[in-house]
Length: 426
Image (cartoon, rainbow, N blue to C red; front, side, top):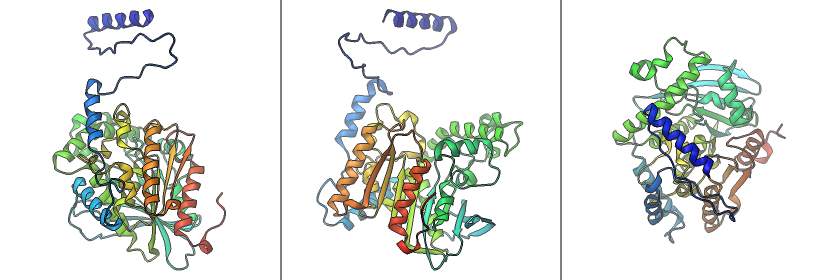
């Protein structure tokens, strides 16, 4: 302890000399007989107890577990209406005006680059992967890319492309074990749509239309080069706060914009003659898992879903886990009505697979387990416990190849007739 206090005194002296402001957390004398470390302070200090109390006092009134609802359908209708109200984003429907920009033949499938309208003001691009030699209508999967602090690309993070830059290759290796799972889905007989989400890829913010105050780090760099991509990601990450403030001030929410885009992507899938409208699934990692949970919960056209690396209860994040999360996940006023597992449970009793990593620093294990318990209870109450599964992997935040294989097996089990399955996985 005396060495710690001496170090603190030295920091304070240096702070006084340099004019820096230093916030010091007072060390507590440890009980020499105790084997437990003192609990670390909350990220919001003395504000945490009353905020935790606020969360505990009003939570989940529209959960299926909150009361005996007249019927599951009545519960889903009311809860989905409440979520749509809270998401605060319902632009007028508009024609998709879809177009095919490029077609490339790959090993076992064709890859189409398509563009379609999301609103009257915005379009997105997506990869559409169509397996070779389809016979009749096929099941489809909406593959939802992650966040990962990598804004320059969206769909390219989960779909193989030619000559990817080094930073993209590294991201795919770290997050996905080096394999882009959309291609594997296509090789297993699924039509796959991989859209760019708002703020990523073809929808990324245009630095030429932003004040130079924020974009000077990009000066002198050539767009498309790895140096530019990394500098752009840093700029876009820092700009998230200002974009979020502007979104909320405008009267809507970032999740509302994201989820609307995903629902429009389902609209586009349904225009494709290759797709069986009764066999559509979705999957994603990280914010892709967050999107998958909400798409499945809010859109009855999704018949099976996989959520990887994004299932917890919100209470468990309050003390010291929100620091790691993006602005893209916040829906003001949601917790009194529906926690995250409650939203995902709106998909019940349709098949839902949760993939959690025990070394995931974004969520405490207790939050993952609480969410699992709530989902299990809903599926049991609806009489279909076997249609929910939650698996844990002793890994950091990721969707590795074995995890991908488990996810694809799940989607194949529920969406692909046994006679049409593509054989053993690699």
